Image 1 (tube, rainbow, N blue to C red):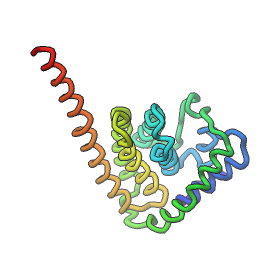
Image 2: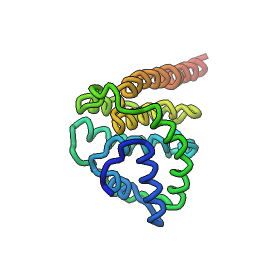
Image 3: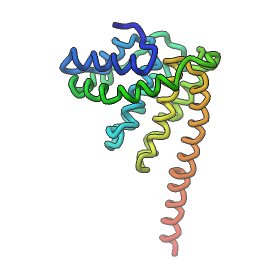
Image 4: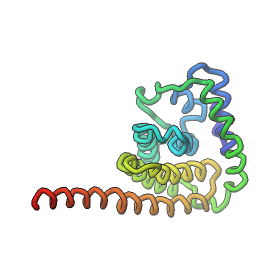
Amino acid sequence: MSDTPKNVCGIIDRLTELGDEQDKVSIGDIVESFGSRSYGPMLLVPALIGISPVGGIPGVPSFLALTLLLIAVQMVFGKDHLWLPGILKDRSVDGEKLANAAEDMEGVGTFMDKIFYGRLEMFTGPTAGRIAAGVIALMCLAVPPLELLPFAVVLPMGVIAAFGIALTVRDGLLMLIGFLGSGAALFVLITKVLFGMLMGGSSGGSGGMF
């Protein structure tokens, strides 16, 4: 069962199978199921969790971002096999909950597979993948400060999900859209969070002086 899923529905079906077969499903089980070379699916799954209502729980987006950052760094350096530390690999979820959540995503998966497919594959090769991984790493670093804004983490997680789908189905057009989306996410980070913190600090300082 270690063959790599070729589309979004394949990823969802794999998660459903794992949930049905096991009482507890760990991140390590998912990596083993997808195959240690399956960077696309392993980027997509945490990103989708980050976009879901679960991503609204404080601290969850940052944990997901840390996991994705470890994956992205290994992609940048061209590692053939994905490695995760035990503290991440051993994190688990109830199998029944995973299966139910995956089944709820089937309609979305079918829709995604209709609009995302192999095209402009020149933009999904190893070099493009490494560049995308660098952008993903930046998106991961942007997540913790964006937790300060309601639903703002959806932007970087959406970009990472786009890259995950693009690498899975080899959709170069979606890869290019992901690069554009990353620019929008960084713009929000700079204008809404960093500038907001600086302006807030300046206001606080002025109040103290006068």
